[in-house]
Image (cartoon, rainbow, N blue to C red; front, top):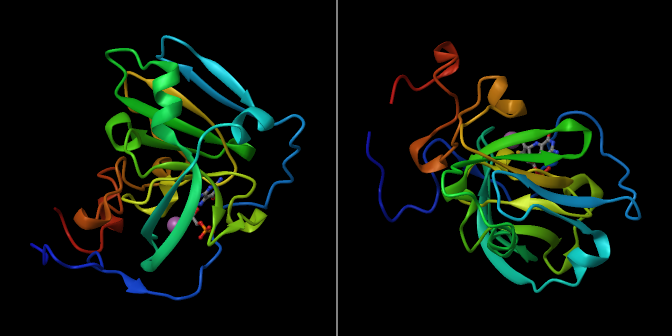
Length: 201
Ligand SMILES: Nc1nc2c(c(=O)[nH]1)N[C@H]1C(S)=C(S)[C@@H](COP(=O)(O)O)O[C@H]1N2
Ligand SMILES: [Mo]
């Protein structure tokens, strides 16, 4: 099935004006004095940032639509934060690094191809709509990868682990797709075809 190339709403989605709160488990209490963001794995220069060091980095704004795999989409979100590309550049990915396992508080993980993470709109987001991110929405800092389904945008993010081979994160181990492109309806992976409501791609 092809979709309208000018469409704003990906196939199978419905818009909402509210911003639903969705996550597995509880909202973690993040201790900023102990907080670290680490970039590790297949990189030339692994590093770790403190909260103050993160706040000192240049920021940019990303205006985007977000698309949850549970079929809600929310238009015109204004996020501000530290560009992911600056962090990847600082670490220097190995020539054969191709995937990233994103780590978050409470052992949440999600896997993203490096090429999908290494895009200018992606942020370590600190604010939404001009206000600091609330804890429910991933504050003090969450990942934002707006062109993929929103489960890839890990709340309470704590690091990137660069990898040569793809490994499934939390929802991916539970049947969600390894890439998660809403325009291709990459909701579920091949591991669990019974859950693919729209048949094979
Ligand atoms: N740490 C963590 N991040 C997470 C999740 C989670 O369970 N834990 N759920 C994901 C899912 S499925 C969605 S739809 C979005 C929801 O973000 P929101 O609550 O700000 O709308 O967070 C994503 N990030
Ligand atoms: Mo989700």
